[in-house]
Image (cartoon, rainbow, N blue to C red; front, side, top):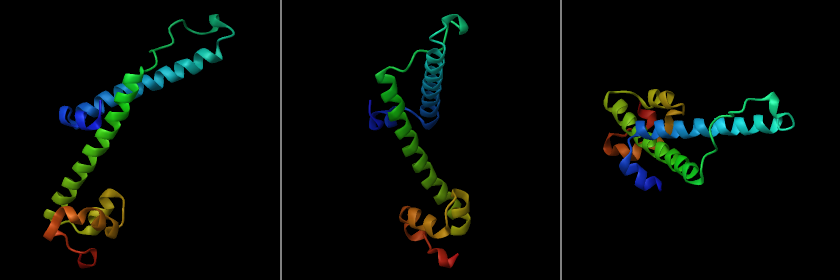
Length: 124
């Protein structure tokens, strides 16, 4: 399973849902393993059911690939958001504030997507 394969078959919402499911299970299994190690000397001290089993290698790789898909889809969505904000009249300062960077950084990162619609930040 590669990010390229997944990108064509999942939406951002389904990728996030599956990633969150795997990440939560991984976290719970890790916490359960830590708990089991802590009470290994006295099995009666802890519950018999310690939670979900650890992820398989295939599931861990799926989680990793899903994380990459989410990052790629979010970045593309960000580009579209910048384009929409600029088309609606937002300044580069406002765009930068919305994404947590300076107006210059926003312009440098996103202006090539906008082509002729990208005006240098000094012209805000």
